[in-house]
Length: 211
Image (spheres, rainbow, N blue to C red):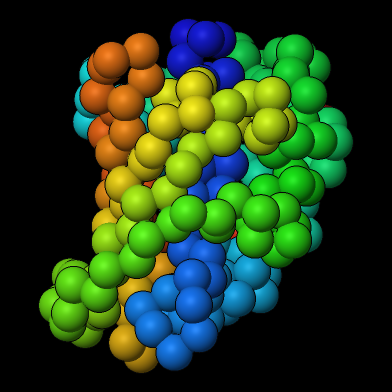
């Protein structure tokens, strides 16, 4: 269970490090960059991360700006990350997380860091669609995924210097990212994850240090 939670925490950079970045002005990449800017400005959101391959697992995440996260696994432990500190609650007991949380909460929310990751990214406009009844514009982009030595905190599932292909659903109303579908390979094994975002700027999301 601890290993599963740590893997879920390692997916945090996937939320934004693989989020849309700018390609060239006046093309599909420019639209994605606008969505990315809007995402960075959010005060809070919820995300459901579903790993479909190699084995199905679901992780719930809440974010409160600028650096607070609550990560929970159904029928499992809950962890809280605030700044550079992380805690896990198991059976009513609080324990310090044995990970370097700084890489999870700072670097991948830095726009300059993400601009460095955008090199070599190709963006394709898939046109208009709908998601749960909401009009969206879909994009597909292929992005080089840096190995851990170059990208601190990168998830193991997306590391190794390979490529990740992402399909993004961007609301035509709010310009916010509603869904990411990410596929990559690690050690010759396919990795497939889906991330669904909701409750943008919800005042009900409050993340406090554990007592």
